[in-house]
Image 1 (cartoon, rainbow, N blue to C red):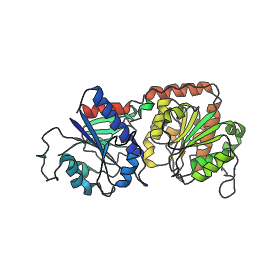
Image 2 (image 1 turned 90 degrees about the horizontal axis):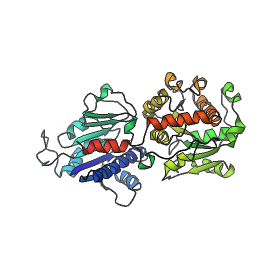
Image 3 (image 1 turned 90 degrees about the vertical axis):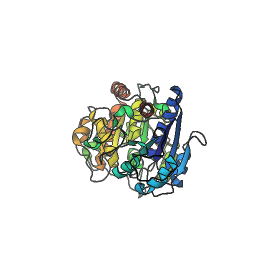
Image 4 (image 1 turned 120 degrees about the horizontal axis):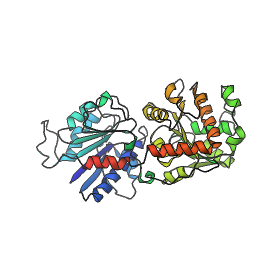
Length: 405
């Protein structure tokens, strides 16, 4: 029997991406166990009932996995260790180097949290084999299995790690992203806008306001400062495209986006999308914040431009740009600078990356949409390269590593 416990949280502060990717890996473990005729028991451990509720709401069926709540503070993970070990081993930790209570193979504890620490891992290592999904590279990781799908570089932070799964081939995408069907259409008409569930910087709203010359909430049309960029834009072409915005009611601009949808027939709002691969495949181009969505778009093959809105997205965003797969328009946060060399590597839009300030991020995106909509051959090449880079089977690879150790 292989026991795997996933330790992750989600709440109003922690994005649901952590529990979503753990769910994907958990399902892959269950499926891989069946295929290999192995007995696998998978369950989840969360900090509190808010995390439990958000996790269970994403189950494919009620009771898909058992969930144990520690009733703890997700920010103080070391304080949860006694209760966590009590749940896993049936006994409190006794401080011994090797637990006398584990008479069979150690269970796996799969941790996906920014609040884990080396001391947390050290305290648990006598009782569990530990897997850690990292994307910050902020400390040395004394774990048995280290996963970072944002980079294929073996960082000094991983010197204490055992087995390492590094690179895009380990991106844990849902089953729907394994070899999905996609056709590059001669005429580009549909654009996917994926700005994150909360869209804290209002990217979708601002972009649409500019395209449709609509007044914003203050009654003024957004003004872009770089006249060289804006004079080269073909507003008519941009307005002729259909825009599909993936968001949620947690978006502080949600009501204003709905008002735009009601006013403009080319704007379509989506929330709680279950078949994201099909929605992506229906689009000819995409604009996306950094994160796992970029990997999903790669697996489908939708020509995409990204932008940065959080520091933990930087490695992935710059990696995709450096590999000339997904150009980066810049950092939407005021005063931030994206790596110029990586941004300029996009061979379709080099001139658009001179000044990555928020206004020029908008301009870079608008120029990308205009350029790509006019060039089916470039879209075809971009789509081919993206799909060749990432096949969507990362969760299965992680599951095999867990079940073979």
